[in-house]
Length: 380
Image 1 (cartoon, helix red, strand yellow):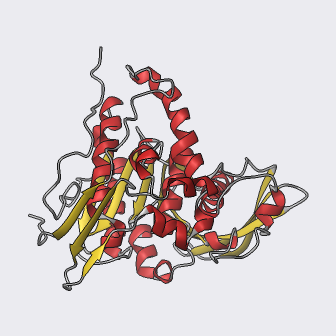
Image 2 (cartoon, helix red, strand yellow):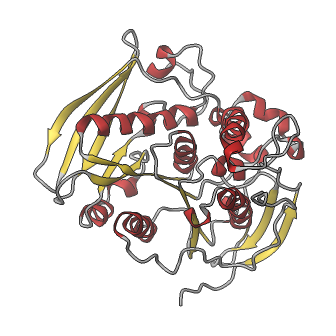
């Protein structure tokens, strides 16, 4: 039986209850699943666009240029050229191929800028099991550097856009899906988005808005993917007391990731017209899998749990409660081979009927009472 030593929580604070996603902006209740598309459009305006801005538009064109072709079971490298005819946006896509025949399930990660994505053990884990791994470096679209002018090619292509850096990176996930569709190698019904930390925020936003993602797997998204209305402190497995990230922290350190309007809610989090359970709910009824680490206190284990169980109410409402999953492991802020193995297990469960790992659904702490008093409406 999977079991971890319980996290020692030293402080737990509900700043405000989580807002009810089952109320339309005009105050009327959401009563039936047929109401959800309308409510989903409203939540996009707040949980996605107020937070991260509107994604850049669909490109005028997209071309996929082969740069290097490896042997079967090896990697191919491509350049994606897209944007507008006047202002081209381009970035590199690396495809780790499998020897399995036909169109295959695909995992897409925008974290090509992280060292662990260069570990062939990660690629082999997927490709040895018939799953294609695709990575791109989101920082080719917009550099991950503070205080630089907004003059990347994507800003030149869409000068009137109000998109943030995270939104520009999320746009990259969708362009990779476009490229895979052109190449004809992907099972387009079995595409997973994943990413770590800022990459997790990106994967979550991309997957919330691009319904071609069958599985959305943010790993430790911290503030911007956990929960703004819950704060905590806890002792790590190494004995250090740490606290969770809050809204003012992330806006101070990474202002280009969020819209300027988010500054209006510093010190006024209860007035924020959304929280991250509603961003997660935008994935429903598709599969959402939240990966976390017990000693990653900055990522907010209890805030993440609260947003997960709140989003689960939407999944219940849509008759897809089994499609929201989470798991915690020992350790810190990372995306490990074991984390990727959990994602692989979920993909094989969906595509081949493999048994789900027992680690899904486990939490290494005493689960708190829900930080909300609403529930999914009963079917009439």
